Image (cartoon, rainbow, N blue to C red; front, side, top):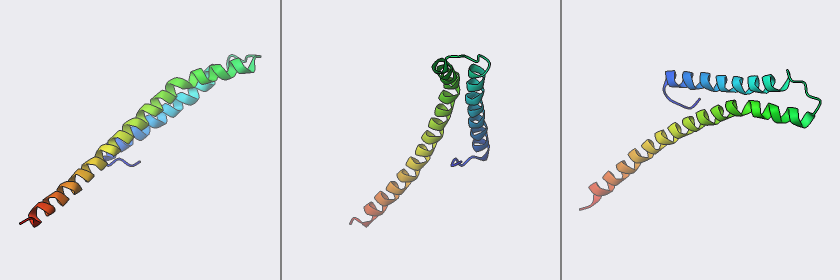
Length: 92
C-alpha cells in the first residue's frame, strides 16, 4: 500500500481484507442457503448481502485516498513555500 506508517499500513490492509471477507460471507450466506427457484430474487438477495462489506471497502479506500492526498498537499506546500522564499530573497 502507499501509506508511510508500517503499523497503519498493516492495519488498513488487514481491515480491507476483512471487509472483502464480509462481502463474500454476505453473498454466500444470503444466496446459497435459501436456494430459491426464482433467480432474480436470489441475485437481489446476494447483492443485499454484499452491501455492508462493500460500504466498508469504500470507506477504507476513501480513508487511504484522503491520507495520501493530505501527504501530497503537505509536500506541495513545502515546495511552494521554498519557491516563495527563493523569490523573496532575490528581490532587491
